[in-house]
Image (tube, rainbow, N blue to C red; front, side, top):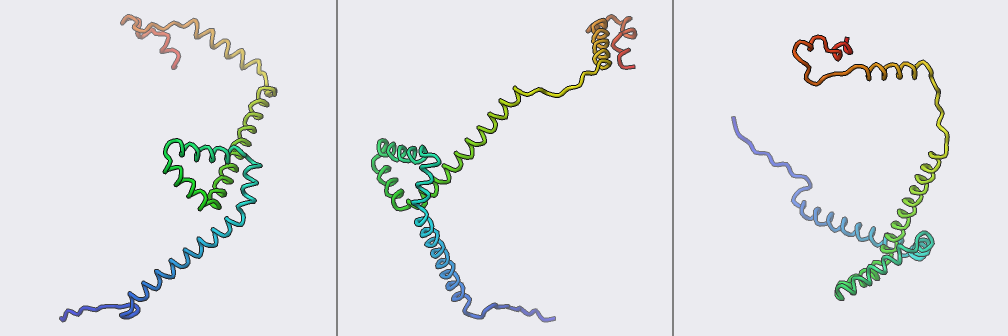
Length: 168
């Protein structure tokens, strides 16, 4: 029996050329996608900034305060943060808008929970009074009060323990 080695090739000897071209195509598509997203964010930036200020202006003011605090802590860090904010302002605006919407949703849920809690205390709860059941419970409580169980009864009283009668 002969031992034969088979080698299967896909695409021939130019596999590495196809791989390099594929990498360049993927990089090109990713850069085009980032360019489109950047353009879209830049086009929506003024609208989103105004909407953020209307929804929750504290989000924008807190962001500016955080940049100012970076200047107080470290001047180079503050400068880098300012440059990144200016360069990426469309995405910063989108982030601030998302944060304002999130805070708005949280406030709305808090208000609903507060009004729900307030309404619970002001409403009557429906109930049905059952005389026979309450009488039965009261009788059972009286019987429980009468029965006294010693923790360590004497040996002769262990068989006559009233606790054993409860489980019969």
